[in-house]
Structures are given as structure tokens and as C-alpha cells.
Image (cartoon, rainbow, N blue to C red; front, side):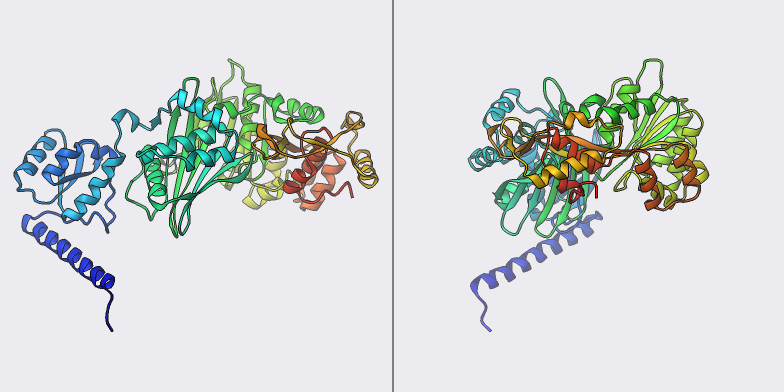
Length: 557
């Protein structure tokens, strides 16, 4: 069967590459040096190594600096006996222990291609200086996702790495918590998580531009540039005049390239005052009473991204006094709190939640925050710490507050320790707040009015229902102020499960979740959904938003 000209050329190209690599292997054997294929093999190219050798010198000497660890430098050369190569190697050997490898010219060209991403060394330290004026100009332009889309679509600079500046600035301007870059078959996609939901900002990145953005992110995050088939995690900082914004980088391989998620930790978005988080007065009174106690365990439950850590940080700020010792063990440290000793788990170094908590107890703290209880060992240490005079805060992954009890029992915590140590369990979710500029008033029909009336009558006596007697209900619309989303910002909905003598006695009997829910209701617990409905009646959010997070409203049935 006759082959096309294209097929023949591909075969010839493959044969030429094989011959070139075979020649490199032969020369490596002659010189008694290792052989490297910088295209096919896993030979990471690190930008910290590349900046040691200027591009012009590297090309003249047919050499590529690949990796550096302390004083050891790994390089690849075409021929170590070339005059220019010998001179450059001597220069490098004066300051480093150089490991020399043989490679082909095609491999060298591939390594040199990363010089396009090399920037002055001060920008490689993990800190990005976004021009303040540029950021302010972009903030003025980018008021919505459509504005960001237009800004990216109109990008025409020859320096493709600059587009990341537009993406970061746009995300900051729109108050995004995460940036998602996702490769598809033909184009890369940019999505932003704003107030908990993902929104597509741009979906037409060509493969070259997408790869350039990913490579720039790898560079800033100190990740390996030419490793694309393994997950990598890193971080960098956006340095602004008034604050630093920490960026957490996660990169994983996928079918069409690498998927990137950037988590933006902006200090201005952190509500560290307890009263700002959306508590009702009666719930806040319970929390205030519990965190004033000198000991006990307070757990906050909910899925990832439900605001648990922010709430615990607010607790720390509330209880902090100069004469107190407060220590945390977190994974990772999301925000730095003044006056509080914060540590971060390092599993590779053996510093886990359990070992960290054990070490913290030797420091004689008054208050301890454990980022998450994941296993029996951590749970046991936290429980015993609360029984021996420490106030302990932590988180647990359960759907509701009551579910924390069976979850801890499943982990293996003894019921005779669980009951006395546990003071309060909180469950929470983050709901979007209606945009005050465009929220639209709706008039409820008679059926809804009756449901609301029945709902209010069924609430525990501790809830002051009189403040909801003259309620107004709104729905979302969308305007320039909220980027035509209809919501702007988020608040929390809570439920509190206080452990009193009755609940403690029940825990000893290893109760079912249904038994605990019944006791909680008798103990005047207000559920997250009920708290959400009260926030709708208070004009803060919508019924649609509450049902999105808690399911169909039961109206007390």
C-alpha cells in the first residue's frame, strides 16, 4: 500500500531521531559518562539551574544546566572535549560539584527552549511583583467575567507569560477564591470560583498559550518544568503594597495536558471577627459561653470549603490574650494570626497532626487548634488534652453536627472519654449573599405565608422570632455591581449541638444518629436549614440558595 508523503516524512523523522540518540549513547559510552534523553526520559529541568548559565554561553558550549541541589549541579553536554564546553565546565566546577551527562543536539534544543521563561533572579524567589498601577487599572476594567473574557481575548503582547498577570489580577478584582485552568481537546479553559461556584471566564486558549501559562505557573511555584505526567504542588506569593496574597498551586496530569488549580489566600477576604460570620444572637451567646471555658473540645464540621477554618480562626482571635499561650497545627497554614504560634504538618518529616499535637502539649499551651481530626490517635490526644485543662478547637468531616458523635465512635474513640471531653459541635455551610444593589423583592403567596408562619411557630423558644414578624423576601437578579451574578459575598449558616449532661449520658450508651437528633431537638437545636430560612426572612439570601446547599426545605414537617 502506497504511503503518503506525510507518512514517509514521519517515518524518516523517527529514524533520524533514533539514529541521533543512538549516536549520543555511543559517545557517552566512549567518554564513560551517563547518557540522557531530555525529551523522552524523566530528566527534570529546573529554572534555578538554568539561570546559572546565560543562554548565549550555553548554546556556544552546547551545554544545558538541568538541576541543582546545594553545591551539586547536573548538566548535559553534546561533547565534553569541545573547547567551549571545557572552558564552561571549568568555570562551573569552580563553584559547584558538576555531574556531566551526554545528550543529543535535539535534547539540548529542547532544554534551551525553557530559557524563554527565565526572568531576573529576584522574580524566581516565589514572589511575584504585579505592578500596582496595572492591577488598579485592571480592577477598573474588570467588573464582570465578561470584562475578563474581553481582556484575555484582546491580549496581543509577544510575552505570553504576561497573560498570567491578567488572570491573577482579574481573579483578585472579582474576589475569586480559586483559579482553575483546564485543558480540553482543542482549547484550554479558565474558570474562577466566586462565592463557592465555578464560572467560565475564558474557553479559547490555544495550546501554545495554555502551555505557556502552565509553564509560567510552574516556574513561579518552583516546580519541575518538563515533568507533565505526575502531580506537583507548590506555592508563590503576589506582593502588593498593602498585603501579600499567598497562592497555593496544584497541578495534575489529564488527557489533554495539565490541569492547574490556584488557591488564592487574600488576607482582606478573611473575616476574623466572630460577629462578622453571620451568627444569630442566640447562637452567638452559646458560642461565647463555650469558648470562655478554660477547657473542652469544640468541633466544627462540614465539607471542604464550608468556612470551618475561618470560624476557628475567629475563635482564636476572640479568646486571645497576651498572657495566654495559643498554638496551632495546621495543613496548611492558611492565614497568619498575630500573637499565635502556628505550625504546619510535614508528613515527610514525620510531623503529623498526632505527633504535632503531642509536641504542642509539651509547650504548656492554654488553647490548641488542630487543623483536622482524621484518625483515632489524633482524636484520642485531642480528647485527653481537653480533659486535662486545655481548650481545644478542631474540625471533622461530617454532614451535620450530630453526625460527629458516630463518626468519632467509628474512629475508635471510647465513649467514656468522648462524652466528658466534648463541649460543642458546630456544623456550617457558606451561602451566597444577595447583591444589595439589584436584589428584587418578591411577594409571597398565601401558601408560602402559611408555611413561613408554621415554620416560625415551630422554632425553639431561644430564637427571637419577633424580629422576623415583618419579613421581606428577595430573589437574585444581576447587575454591574455583582458582575451580573446576582450575589456578592457569602455568609455562614450554622447549627449548634451542645453537649449537656443528658447528651453526655446518651453518648455512654453508643446511641444511633436518630437518637441523637431527637435529643438535639429537645435541647433546642436549630438546624442549618432553619438558620438558612431565617437568613432568607432577614433579606440576606434566597430560598434557592438555601435549597442548593441543604436540600428541599421541610418547613418543620
